[in-house]
Image 1 (cartoon, rainbow, N blue to C red):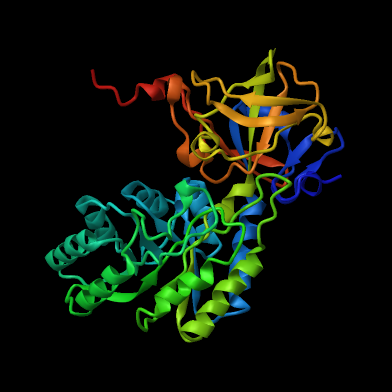
Image 2: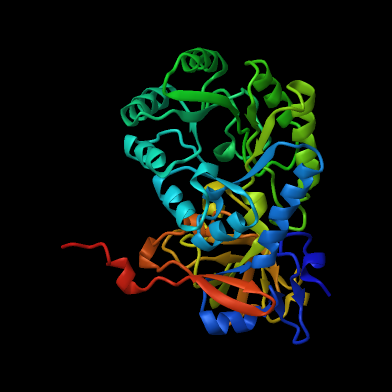
Length: 424
């Protein structure tokens, strides 16, 4: 019986209930993984990452000639993930100097890296130019001023795109909606026209195209076409970047569009609005990595008052999304996944000193008890990326699993690590 079949697409591709009745991810028994590597731990099915990367490339290749798939690396900025997706032929976007350093360390050709960000520092822009980054996405007039000066100082011509805020809102949480007019990101339409005119006269910046992003975790595709229409009305360019944002299934109740339908919607908009002879860029992040990963926890306490509270050894230090966005997750026990969806209703609570540190609310759990290994799926996007040391908790390891073999790609932090930067 397949866990993926039971729980829709929340779990990594190929996950199943093995002969021992345990959850298996990447061919590895989750109970054994918890025993070997400890908990909390991020468990990544390597083949899931590769399959989704290939799905994007294949879907675009079947529909359009000149394209690139950019890994929106803020979702999972881990050297091993960068390396794997570079091997799969993807390009990459980064939103900071740190992400740029990791992308380069992971093997991305700097010419295939795109630097984003609404508040890029002069140091980050110099770092990008010194590395030979292919494109910088300009987010405002301060970006133009700063990058033009730095490029002129170095005697180079830097290729750039303009990020346009199209005034189109995707149907998603307010904190991950980016396409509306009142946004910290990008040029409004009128300012974009001014920026285009200015860049057309620049000796140091080569404007090659336009970029947009309407939001994240979009479970409908109806925002892409109206936003593309706004870009098309701003002029004729060789490159159009329609961003990312495709949602994923965090629970069995969520039914996101397929990668093929997402690609089809964007390719059709490009062809009908600006033509077939343009380069199309898409920037998936969450939809590449979220469902590749599960997080393993150990149950420490079970407390019953008005509700049943299942306390685990992690929480908002390894998954901040429920606290930031009210994000929903599923949960089951690694040694009895076939019982998922049965048992008493409970809240899965983290160990941190915050009442809001609740990972999953009102989830049915089969006879929870201390020592159980609890699993939450779909934690590949923004789990490792947002991990923190609240309450002095060391950050979890990242474990890659493939064909029954498991390897550590990010080690667990230690208490010594917590003090490693102290100087007094």
